[in-house]
Amino acid sequence: GAGVSQSPRYKVTKRGQDVALRCDPISGHVSLYWYRQALGQGPEFLTYFNYEAQQDKSGLPNDRFSAERPEGSISTLTIQRTEQRDSAMYRCASSFPPGLAGALQDTQYFGPGTRLTVL
Amino acid sequence: AQKVTQAQTEISVVEKEDVTLDCVYETRDTTYYLFWYKQPPSGELVFLIRRNSFDEQNEISGRYSWNFQKSTSSFNFTITASQVVDSAVYFCALSSGSSNTGKLIFGQGTTLQVKP
Image (cartoon, rainbow over all chains, first blue to last red; front, side):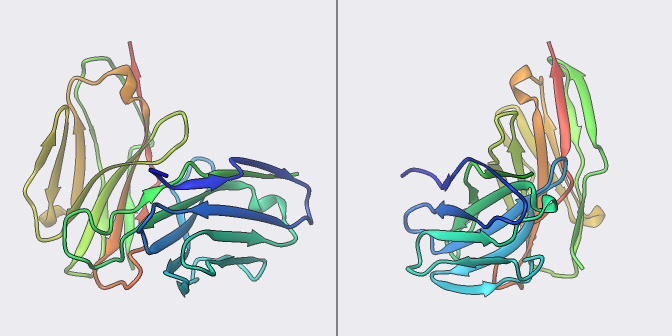
């Protein structure tokens, strides 16, 4: 596809349930990022993948959050035992690897996001 | 520590007015990148511009212009002759050149409302 896609676009779940959010990056983009955006705030970094390697997970808030990208393309962000405070927009972005030469080589392009509501 | 501050929470203008959105950043890195993204009411996050710390040349793209000043650690965004379609939340973001991840640090965003 032309851009980053995410599914589902909206997810409503009950407290205590597990959810899995999917991201399909732009073809050829080896870097993949997950961000979380609370209402009225800017996005906050969660985790970063370079190909299939999770190189930075410093932004994951606790061990209920995990992410994987087993084949270096599609990524899944999983939240176990969801809590109401997990309600937010979850955004995925992809880019070429950081540090490459060229003005736009590592610009991050974002998907439409998944709006998660935990009741 | 790296930080981005967008002090203006909300701005309201009348169509055709010029408007400037402020962005102040903090970083100890000598190499870094600054970005602006637009979030229209539909919710997606749209890339507008990327600048690196070695290029202080101002940029103009149609009605949009950006003023990068390292001396004041600012990267301000001006919309000339604003239009209703410019109504959105605008985010300024920073990434460190020394980071091996390129993760973005976002400001809180400025909500721009352009009234007809």
